[in-house]
Length: 482
Image 1 (spheres, rainbow, N blue to C red):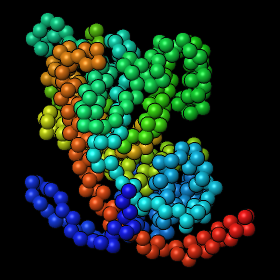
Image 2 (cartoon, rainbow, N blue to C red):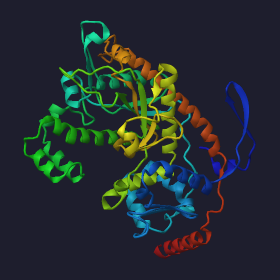
Image 3 (cartoon, one colour):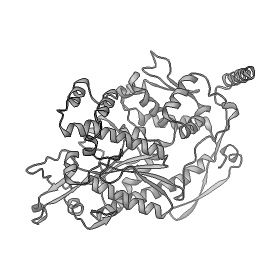
Image 4 (cartoon, helix red, strand yellow):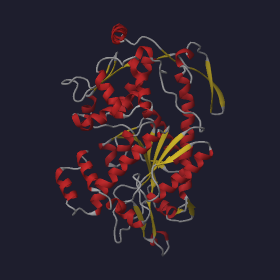
């Protein structure tokens, strides 16, 4: 591995290809403290949706402080000094969330034990080529047939009269998402990448479908959901009564358990990048008759990435896990890499499929109430969804094109392509190519970012006296224990 502590001693001209011309780029030396302070300061504006969230965070000359509630009434829960940032980033690669929270809690306002004798590269180098690249693909939804798709409420059925034909059009999103991932998997593996899908076709990430889940001791999952505050006491008792309809059991319990299992599989795989594949639809489309969906002329895409925490989500005792994830996203490069990846997806959808990003001015409720628009691209939204929050590493949660667009309906309704024994529309190949292009551009971005990391060097951190005093105390304590 490169050692950025010494590479900055030799600073020259770095050349790269841009617009088919050779361009000289001079990268100035960057102090580690400035590097992380700039990152935290930039990330903070996309992580907090509300002022109440900002009340839980302080960034000063010494480091980063996260409070359990308002900083005015509590002591910091997590403290990371600027010199500790690389150690924290390395810890994220090696330890589970619960272990790291415990370590941070025990260290308090002290420095990590042994930090003075442990060399850690000041920043984590990203993967820059397909060989060895680990990609996690999460195909949205579960259904393998129309009955299951109706339970999920993720299907399209349109009258043939809209297309000057007698036969009606129908398809469901999970089929499109899964086959898109299969095509993309083949493309990536041909380039030398390693690819993992979070579930099999028609199965949840737990390895079973909804009907199979009902044959298990599913009430233990209802109890688990209540402990996780997925629903209140009244709904809990109704779910346990045996009178709850399938729709409620599926959406309030089974689906949430599936989300947890997906995230667990992804984090255990430790991918370099994660793509969650969904297909978009217009907001407010009203079904009629035999649950037909009227076609629309609009056709937009959007992509979700981490961020946009609400005050209520991170404040208080119940917000511990979310505060930790916010800390991770403040310090690591995950947020920016997610933004770059998502912006590449939006660009490729426009360039290759002529599908625009969701305009900044729109009537989508999520955009104003729960999201922060990226400053890199329209159509990319920071949003605190479960997967965008808990999955480590760069992640994009993509909602490509409107399934109920009249032109897309005609394409997506065709069963003119088979992959993995699954019949689907050949349109999924076009969408898969979009994602492949976005990953390719993301790797190129990483190549340029890696050159910036070569310019990092150790400098004053603003806490030299306190650090020296604590290191001397650590050495003294270590000597007395031997």
